[in-house]
Image (cartoon, rainbow, N blue to C red; front, side, top):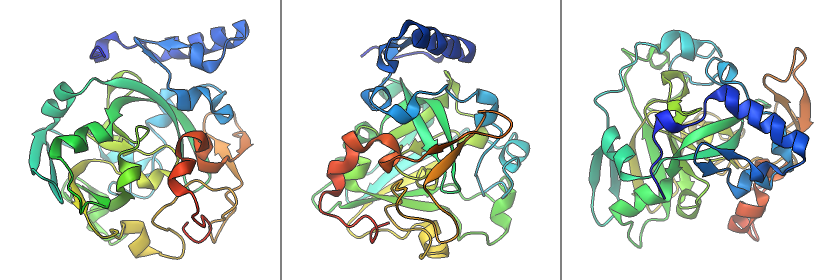
Length: 303
C-alpha cells in the first residue's frame, strides 16, 4: 500500500460534499473514495454511521481529556503550548525485543491510512471522525510479543507542568488503560497520528493515541509513551477510580446501563441545536467484526 502524505488527503469540506453527493446518487457509504484510500468495511457495514462526518470544529473543541481539565473546553484552551517533540514510545514487557521509537520513526515505518470510525463516549454522546493512522498490530509485531503476553497496558505521559489537570487527584496519574492481546491485535484497533488529513491536535491526544472503535472512548488512550505486554490483566485508571462503573472491557453495550444513566441512546454532536439522539448499537456498530472476540462471555458481567 502506498504511504499517504498528509498534504494529499482530501480537505474536510470536500469530505462532507462527497458524502452528500454519494448519498444523492444512491451509492453505499463504502463506495466513497476519500483521498487515496477506501472507507473500511467496518464503516460501510455500519448502519449507525450513515449520517455526516462530524465537523472538525466540534471534534477539536469538545473533548474529554482530564489531563488538561474536566470541562469539555479545557483541552483546547489549555493544551496549545503542550510540547509533543521530542517524543518517544517504548514497547516492552513480554516481548522478544524491547524497542523505543520516535514519533517520526513510527510515522515513517507504516503506511498511514484514513479510517472513519465512530467515537462513542460513556457519557452518551458520539462523533464520526476521519482518523489518520495504522493498525496497532503492525507496531506490536515489531517487538515480537512472546507466549506470556496476554494483555497490553498503555501508559500516557505524566507532565503536570504542561498538563494542569494532573496537578489534581481526579485520577491516579499517569493515565493507564488496557486491552486483551487479541483486542489489541485486531485490525480495527488503530494507532492514530492525525485527523481530517492533518496532524493530530494536542487536545485530541497528540502525538500518538489509540482508537478502539467498538469500546467507549476512555479506552482509547491519548499521548501514549509506553506500551507494555503483560501476563495479567492490568487495572486501568477508571477501573481503579470507580470499579462498579467502569469495567475492563467497556464494550459499547446499550443493554448495560451506567449506574447513573442509560446507555440505550446517544447524542450526536453537531447534529443541530437540540443534538439528535439515535439508538446505540451493540459494539458501537462493529459487531460483525468483533463479536467473535467475546463468544461465550457474559457481557453484562464482563462490562
